[in-house]
Amino acid sequence: MPQPYDIIIIGAGIVGAMIARTLARYDVRILWLEKASDIGVGATAANSALIHAGHDAVPGSLKAEMNVKANPLWDQLSEELHFAFQRTGAYVVAIGPEEFAKLEQLLDRARQNGVPAEILSGEVMRQREPQINPAVSGALHIPTGGIVDPWGATVAAAENAVLNGVELRLNTEFLDFIWEGDKASGRVDESKIQNPKSKIVGIHTSAGDFYARWVINAAGLFADEVMHKAGVRPEFKITPRRGEYFVMDRNQLQLNNVLFPVPTAVSKGILVTMTLHGNTLVGPNAENIEDKTDVDVTPQGMAETWAGGLKLVPGLKQRDIIAVFAGLRPAGNAPCANPAVDYAHDFIIEIPAEVAGFVNLGGMESPALTAAPAIAARVVELLQGAGEELREKAAWNPLRQDRPVFRHLTREEQAALVAQDPRYGRVICRCETVTEGEIVAEIHAPIPATTYDAIKRRTWLGTGRCLGGFDMPRVVEILARELGKNPLEISKKGPGSEFLFRQTKEAAL
Image (cartoon, rainbow, N blue to C red):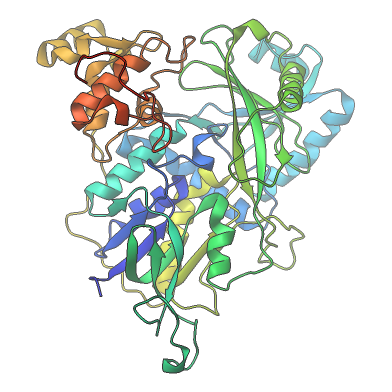
């Protein structure tokens, strides 16, 4: 049997990344698995990029507790890990008297959750946000809300985990559990143990078998399938909830804060928000679907999203749209652990009583991005409560070294960087001013970016108005050169998405 690990983590979204980073401070051997070719490509890859204050979470729910605990942690995290974060505040905007009356209910909920908030008049809102619908009747101001780069935060936490000893394996899909008493073939020898399928000791994967004393389910959209294979919560189901977005060209419409509508029973509603990259984001709608891989946009969804955006900001112009996309939220049906709270869509964070060696997470929809640091801390508490002795490493380093972002530097800093490394003087993406030096740095980072989309998520390359039309051939060339591969092997997002199919000229590739 191969050398066992102490802990295996399944899933490398923002929740898995924060768990890996938090556990990396302890003297334990950790294996972290992701079935995709990069980290942060599921629910983490397509969301509203917000750090929620916690005003809207159901009081007494695990979502409310984790959201409120995690919100203040993001300032220190962004300083230690060097990712983009800004505490902008947020507004829940009411249009008309009926919606204004609902602001009092939201204010009461915010107070129950311990979240600072106040109701402002329509006149004040028109002064603070000149682009807002002039029919605004008032708004709930939540000053502790913020915006974040979710890809940057995930990569930063993941790199810090890897630098502190976590072993990350990409392109490795979880298949099933290995139980105490299983034969080497993977079939259970139930005669050897008193309670068959009561203790997990490892997992079968597409890359072989791995053993550990604990397996943590952080599989996002597929967390229900993982827990069902453990015999846990057979009634639990994750429904992929599709949300569609518009990305507006940079600097075409200036907002100062995040603008929410009055929420519905299904979601926080279609918002209009500034982003850390200067674009305006409009969305998402909320549509329950069955396919956990269906991230297509639809005419109906786009129409609904655009109408929702216009309700808040009538000055939005379709000519300023540069991209559309859709993401999936892993919406669960878990009842709140507190029986006094009538809520059937809470987080699951538990060690199930019926299975040993298993930490189970599920229903990690919004506000899971915000809550991820607190979820990770709760996982540590659960392990310690189960008798796991977690001793801190003497050499644990909470810091991640920043990498230069050329467009954010002063002219003097840019000149000095180019003098040090001329590759920073070659601009590959003109829309976003991303240089060859930045691309090469990501290819050789602690978690190497080996596909076009991996480079895109880390540098923002290819997200401007040309959407990669200028930079893509050059990025393929750089990836092939730096990875020592044939350009025919370079892909957009992993196997099956290669850009080039065959050689058309005699020139050697």
